[in-house]
Length: 152
Image (tube, rainbow, N blue to C red; front, side, top):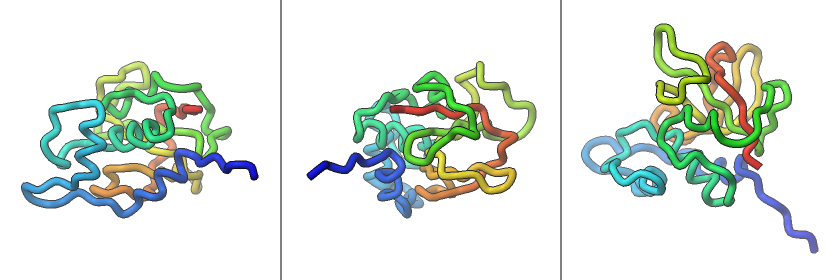
C-alpha cells in the first residue's frame, strides 16, 4: 500500500483554533513554536505568524526561514506567481501596518506570513498563526501581497 504524503497545509489545519492565552500565562504550544528558533520570547504576546510557519515546515523537514520576521520568508523557497499558488505547497507574505510600507526587497519591516488557502475576489485566504491571536483562516487584500513561495 502506498503511503499518502501529507502537505504543510494539512498539518497547519490541525492547529486551527489554538489561541494565545490572555494575561501573564502563555500557550505552551505557541511558545514552543516561537522558541524553536529564537530563545528570547517569554510569552505568546509577540508576533508569531512566522514562528507558526517555521514550526509546520520543521515538522515536515521543509525549507524554513528560522526567523520570527514574517518577511524572512521572501528569501525561502521558489518564487511562484499568485495565479499559480497551491494550497498545501505555498506560503504567502504580506505587508503589515499602515502608511507607506517598503516592498519585498526589505526583509526587516512589518509583515505577515501564512499558508495559501485560496483566492476570494480581491483577497487571498491565508491559513496562519497570529490571526486574531489564533491559528485560523483569514482574508488579506491582494494589494498587500509581497510574494508567494513554494517550499517543497
